[in-house]
Amino acid sequence: MKIKKSYLILIISVLILLIGVSFAYFSLEITGNDTAKYNTITTGALKLTFTDTNALTLTDALPGDSATKTISVKNTGTIDTSYNIVWKELTNTITNDELVIEATCKRLNSSNTEEGTCESIPQKEVSSNKLKSNIAIEPGITHEYTLKLTFIDTGSTQNYNKNKSFNGKIGLEEYKNNFNTDSWATIVANVKANNISKYNVGDTKEVNLGTYGTHTLRVANTSTPSECSTAGFSQTACGFVLEFADIITTHNMNPKGEYKGTQYDYGWNVDGWPASSMYTFVNNDIYNALPSEIKNAIIDTTVVSGHGSTSGETNFTSTVKLYLLSTAEVWAQGSSNTIEYDTARDVTRQLDYYKNLGTSTSNYSGAIKKNGTSNSYWWLRAARSSNTYDFLYVSISGDWTNSYAGNTDGVAPAFRLG
Image (cartoon, rainbow, N blue to C red; front, side):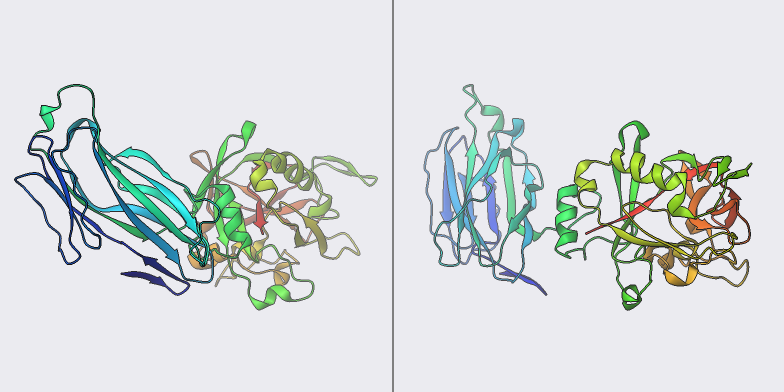
């Protein structure tokens, strides 16, 4: 039998282990039958029937006895992949978890010579659906398992298991990446290898930020269209982008006070996002709160951001780890409420997440983020082009608006892995 994907063929020497069990006072017989179909024995001695093996016989067995079987899995594809060893079917009425299974593993190279190591399967009761998950295997490599099924000897009378039954099938399934359950090490490795097809835009995963608490990261983008290669184009919505789906904390963009000899009673947007207090806060406090396994995988991003009304200002380009989003990355222009004040709208693109939701200036609920259980305002990196003191931000309804730079609103940055 073969399991085949576009990039993988797993050849399984023995894919299915067919088992039929009935107890007649601890007597065990294990037989092999190359042509046998699924078979359940309800009387007589315990029997296990394999579809592909020579007979193994253990007569008059007592608790503590066991039987072994070898299966192998070979990756005949061209890239690394992973698989699970599972119970395809399982019915087990043997009580007290006294029937257990385990396996040792040999790693064989393309010449069928033992080389390196592979992980064994520690002893576990015959109950859990998966015997072992996320087993990595390289092209040309074979994993040869010796499975061992044991009826445990407890040292006491075990008549309570007389006439109990067990039957099941052991097989393989392809391991599927899951953003929510994969470790960060696995996610980072997959992104670096461009093996991200199993991670979907919109998938989420919690991350602990220490004193800032636990928050939710969301896959906001996975695509890299040709426009991302255009000179002067912001890289903030290109590649594998993660954004915080909720509000981490609140902070001002710039406090009220004096900047470059001018007093701003409501804060300022002069020199844009790269010169802001928020820029420093996000790339120091928030960045350093991330687990090291994430921090070490964040790549530098070229960020283009808009300017205010100060004479001579143009769009700003910076290189940074974490960044706030811009208007074009959240909303497409809808039939109403056109965004007029972000001068950098044309040098970035809408993130896949918001594009998939159809988020626009007339359909904006997809941009709502919460601080705890309540909808929250959250900052964008775009200075309002018509004055020197506002930045744009997302309202509690998901629409766009603007606010004094000195106000304290939500912080929900993004970053890229690679």
